[in-house]
Amino acid sequence: MKASNSITNKKLKSPNNKKIYYSSMPKPLFFIFIFIFYLLLPIIFNNNNYHYVKYVKASNNNNRYIYAACSSEPEKFEPNSPYESNLRNLLTSLVTSSSQSLYGSFSIANETSTDIYGLYQCRGDLRLRECLGCVENVASQVQLACPNAYGASLQFEECLIRYDKTNFLGMLDTELRYKKCGKSVGGGDPEFFKRRDDVLLDLTVSSGFRISKAGLVEGFAQCNGDLTASDCSVCLADAVQKIKTVCGSAEAADIFLGQCYARCWASGYYDSSPGFEFLYRFFGR
Image (cartoon, rainbow, N blue to C red; front, side):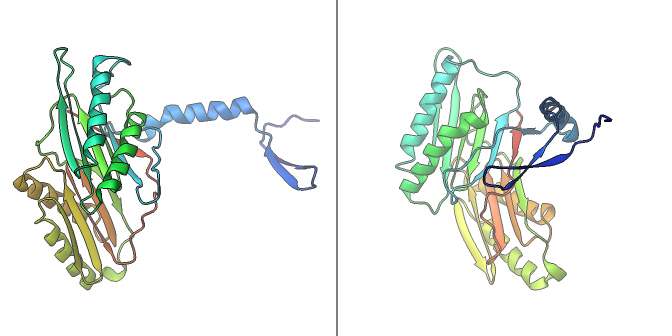
């Protein structure tokens, strides 16, 4: 009988006479294939601003994961180091504060030059108990997304946590962190684009959290609480412009920048399911 290198599927019968299909592909060959694919990822996705890491799962469908951004510097802090201790204290402070306010920022400094700065921002329409629940969840997962990183941002549907060893508080950051574009409007409906532009224009006048609606188009936008009103306007204007240029004629669009976001959609269209959000964005210094 001649040997064959092909991979075949064979049928077996289980005790209850149901057919079972299995592959005769040798296990070592399978693991070698997975290993080679893993090595090729940086080549396939050749962009220094992006990195694939473990998916972080939200605790419920209403608070889905959106993105994580990890410090791009190669150096990591050591376990049980002064920085790790400061990070734990910072996250505790963020969680405690979230039971009293939808936004809070903190800094921790000591004589060992392991300063750390951080904030949390809950969505402006949440109740305090919802804010607390989200911040607790994100605080428990941020090190899963960015293990031992000196800086990280973890954005869920209802809240954001960000920290870094460099003071970023109050400094305008309009780098694109995440985008999601829906399907294109069929036929280039001029009425839709007029309503969409009305909503987007209205969102740019926000100095915090704002909801807007025009006809069948809805949207909302928010800045982080550390921004001044003028910087918030700059950030939102940039986010709105990216909705138009990046997502074009999409019926729904989400644009998240470093310190603000804007979202709009045709009524009844918006999909709140997690979908494919496996990409974690680095941000540089």
